[in-house]
Length: 475
Image 1 (cartoon, rainbow, N blue to C red):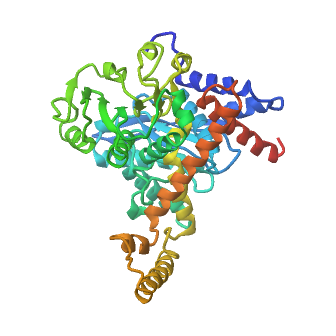
Image 2 (image 1 turned 135 degrees about the horizontal axis):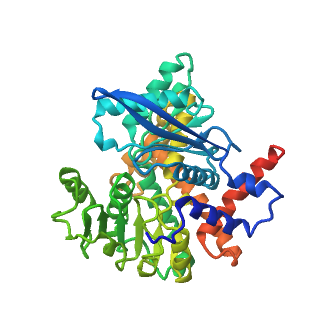
Image 3 (image 1 turned 90 degrees about the horizontal axis):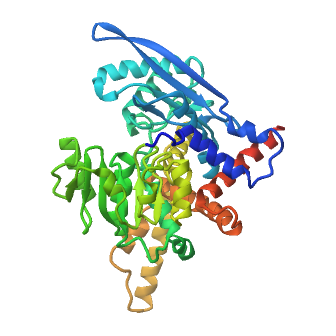
């Protein structure tokens, strides 16, 4: 990245400042919304491999306009205070935009998870959890983490178990963290939630021809050429759903060791399995391998999905990006400097705070499930089936009695009779969330020409909702 490039935190602050220029906030409220409320830094030791190893972790709370606050915990050697605070700010705006009733938070542990075996990671995670729980930085009513880069269901299960050990009488203890395995109070659809949200976001964009025209695109998702950067959890699921269910062509996949390209499109599942077996994309038969992955990021395509780390599109390569539509599956993949260059070139960017909100949305559903102590669909599914069966039987009776000569189409009866289970309800809720959030952004985008882009529109919607919440509290 060029030395003049702003940091991730500076980029978030810059985009916030750009948005509030179009607002009339009371004196001091702008600063109150922008700044991070508090950041806790912990350094703890764990005896491993015959020695004491010291680890540094963070938990940042950006805004408590609503509680609990929400945000993932990432494990990476790049974790630092500025990054965690920037991500916490994004969580505040993200939750406000998609109307999930949380403030923003984020956590991180400076560690390479690949350098430790499973038992050692469990010890480290439990000790980190202990340090946060005893300060109420993990609590179902105050601060609820989730998975992020380097963590997953396994780590969330350890965190939940450690919390319950320390709070044995808290009946809502399972709600202290989301993204857990189903066997530990998780919810169907959480693992793929962010990738599914990317799919729903693109489907919503493609419902508006006038929005597509701004990106110099037309038609539907079928046949659209997509490049995905990062085949982790988010990129993999987004690419798979878009190709298998919407007919899009995944022509490029960019990973750490290089990239694959295939003009005819690739089987995402095959590429993922190859990567899991070999550790990279090299020699994968799905496409031609290129050692220079950055060149594929800049290749001609219809849609670019950066789904890995922040700052991959920056001042050094923004002018060479050829995709007319970028959807930010990762947090902050486009820097503030690159964002300006791309906007001037007419590239439409679907911003991260909206695009990757599927994870926090389904986390919210999991939290509600844990607090209600009942899975979604358990009370109403069979009642729905019984109602549908009455209607089907009446239709069949009318056809038989009146000799109408028509029958129900094959598969309709079975499909219609099936009541909504938890997964169907989760997908329905996520789809509705992504639709309504996009509509709130595009309304500002279209009605206020001076705003100019979807990112600024998203910030305007989110900041106004946070401001309204603070005003209601008397600030």
